[in-house]
Image 1: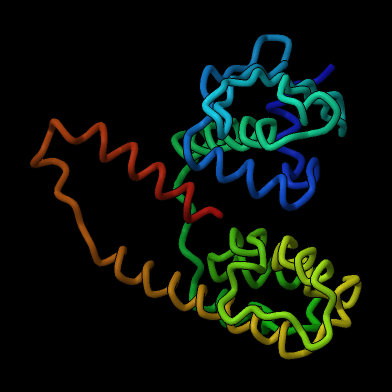
Image 2 (image 1 turned 180 degrees about the horizontal axis):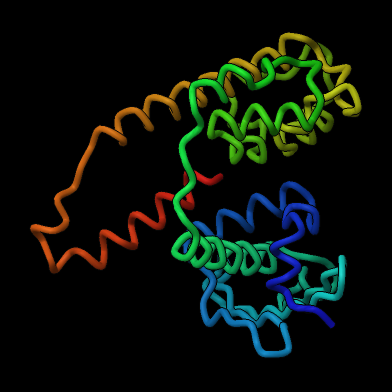
Length: 241
C-alpha cells in the first residue's frame, strides 16, 4: 500500500469525482472546513470535514499505485467519492504545496521570450498547447474552473436545459483541442472562453508588474519577519499555479 501523499504528487484530484462534486469540495476547502487532517506512517489520510449543516464527517483515504480509495461517513460518501473527501484531499495538497514552496528556490517569472514563444490561444489548439500557454501566462488554475463563471455565458438557441446545465459544470479546459468531445460547440462559445482567458492573462501580467515594483521593509519590523516569510511562501505557491 502506498501513501496518499505520493498519490497526490502524481495524480489530479479532479479525476476522482464528477465536476460538480469537485467544485463543491474545493469551495469547502477554501472555506477551511477541513480539520484534524493527518497522514499516518502507513500513508493513510484521516480528516474531519464540517458539512453544510454543521455536522462533522470522518474521511479516510488509502492509496495504492494509481488507485485511491476513500470513504466518508456522510450518506453520499459511503458509496461514492463526496465533496468532503475532495475537500480533505485538496486541503492536504495545499499543505504539501506550501511545504514544497518553503524548501524549494523561488521560480523565476516567465520571461518576455517565453511569453512570445508560447502557442497562440485558439479554439483548435491541443490540450497540451492550452496548458503550455496557460503556464507561460500564469493562469493554469483558471483551466479547471467551471465555464459557468465566464461572463455572458448563455445557452445556445434550441439547446436543451439539461445539456446546458451539464455543460456549465465542465471546466474550461474541456472545450479545447480537436480531440475534445466538445470540439463541435459553436465558435462564439469557444471565442468567449478565449477572450476570458486572455483577460485573465492580462490581469496576471499587470499584477506581476505591480507586485515586483512593491517592496516591504521587513527588516525594520522584526516582529513581522515570521509572517512576511509565510506570506512570501504563499505567494510563490499561488504563482506556481
